[in-house]
Amino acid sequence: MLKGNTGSSTNSNAKLAGAEAAGKAKAGLDNVKMAYVYASCAYDLDEMLAGIADEMPGVPVIGNTSFTGVITPEGYISGPDGFVGILAVSDADMAVGVAAVEKAECAVEAGEKVAKLAMERAGKTVPPDYFYMVAPPGEEEFYLKGITKVIGRVPFFGGSAADNSISGEWKLYTDKGAFADGVAVAFFYSDKKMTNKFTGAYRETKDVGVITKVIDNRVLAEIDGVPALQKYADWRGMDVEALKGGALLSETIVSPLGVKDRLGDLVAIRHPMNGNDDLSMNIGNNLAEGTAIIRMEGSVDELIDSTGATLEELKERMAAPAGYYHLVHCGGRRAGIDSRIDEVAKQLKEKAGDVPFITEFTFGEYGFEADGLNTCGGLMLSFTGVEA
Image (cartoon, rainbow, N blue to C red; front, side, top):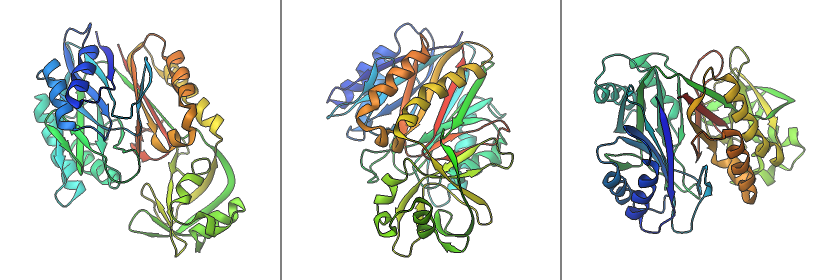
């Protein structure tokens, strides 16, 4: 039977924090096969990993730094000197391969390498039943392309590493160590089904245009032939000057952009990150010319309530009771929710019931919807349940 358990710590000593959280997480589990670990960028992460290894020797670990904190059944966990949350998973019948590859030059090649290494670590020569991925913000889609070249379309979930100030201090790690640029995966071979609910939970508006110019995948230059920042400002009735620089990031938390998949099952949210002097916009994920882009809306109240509603939808999708929930919540949404984050923790705890869960706050979210096409987005929720 698959089981999960969580542990956390806010000890200022990174090694002690890792050991404390791991000691709690392994309690009651007979055969720990792997552990998800989310921590503060303030920690010496290699020391933290050493503390975890002291308590769970030989257990594969995967995770990343999380924006400001984590949520577990204990509540919202954060601290001025650091924090760590762990979800340990046990299942005698499950095989897992955890692997990481630092990027050399090409993200696609790194994805290919990490997929082959993960299969090797699991002792397998076939694709997994599902997989988890973490990467830094920037080239997530290209790491995914490389992995898909090796294993084909296999359902996945995960999120991008985050820091507390969008200053590039994020890290990802496995039990082999921490690094800043590359990709890490956990390949799962199991008869326990994984179910994912991937959503922005925003409302569509009538403001829709065609992307007519994109630069280097993530700079939205024109919508309908009009400078993108001007178009967005006109849609919202705002002064374009007020959206330049980093002001755009915070202004768009409640009104981002979205792109629909080919069947309309999913609106993948695209978070505008920076308003440039040439009136282009830096976007948090890749875009394609000739496709439609939609202005979305959602109040802070709706951002909070969407967490409980999305977990309830996930539960309704699952054919059997969950052994654990892995909840990826965008760090931008968390920033917009701000001091009301305890309301999110309360909703998640209520909806999860007795099922252990961990929530991380990311700078990019990964998941899929009805047609199974793996997708990367921003300002989204990727809520995953794995059967007991």
